[in-house]
Image (cartoon, rainbow, N blue to C red; front, side, top):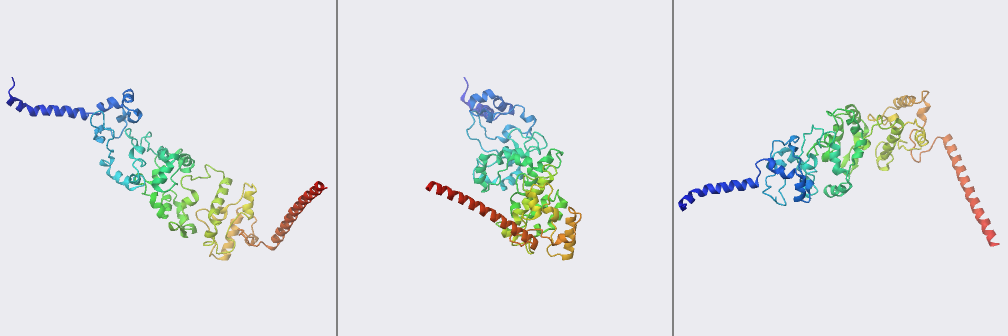
Length: 421
């Protein structure tokens, strides 16, 4: 018979054994105990209504950057089985502190204050368990896959309302097909992976405000400088022209025109690869007219001299509408990024410059080219001979239409008389 004093001596050891047993039942000694269930699809299907959500491939750690971290390194509170219905959020920031701070300060982290459900989380971009290095071509954040990963939210129509609720902006709805039509995506198919222009290259990685992001909305100078990292010569030329130096009053204050005002943001085309020269020329003219036919803008800036409000009434504009495949657009005379301006320059110098420009298409260009109107402003009077011809044609048109109308009225009147008799 065991004496009570002996039991008292053994009690600490008994408690230790029980404690170890309970701990072993609650916290797995290695990942194999977790994977016994979570890698078994059949067993998961019997235990939960969402087996695909909790299924983990048994070899996931072979490709994961977290291959040296046990499950409990992230899942600190799984408890025993059955697990609690609601587990604590994974705190990636415990290890990735800098990335977590950037994320929380950016537009992806801000929604956490609005809705935990709507906010994009680390696993949405990086995957949850099978987290590969960004250099791995199978990674969701590999340069070849970034656009697809970003547009899994920014393309889906159902997400548009969520994005609007979070940001009060709807222009974050960016279809993947739009990005794929852009020249930057096209270059990704013919280039190596070292210098691709991906989403993160422009927008940053976690904070999404390092370069473009929210800062771009407040300071348009950032955009030109950033594009200039690759397009150096174009940016130098652009910064020297009126588009960059003139300020336009807007809701965001006085801003300059910048790269995306002409080239768009994601659907950035390049006629060298995607459009023939004639189609690209027509697109350029239409883009220029978006501003230069605006009464508010044209009345404030370059329309100091007479006739600087362009429209399609000129010969060059009419030839494009008439189907001529070889017509001049705005850049033919003004250039593209350098944007030649004749305002404020010496008149004789301007005349010679205009004749030289015209001579590129018209080899016999002479001084009379300078005297002809280039841009036809609305209400601008033509030369006397052109005015006479214009008025004659207008009179003929009015006369013919009037005769047709009178003829129709006469027919109706005759029909009325017949029915009356």
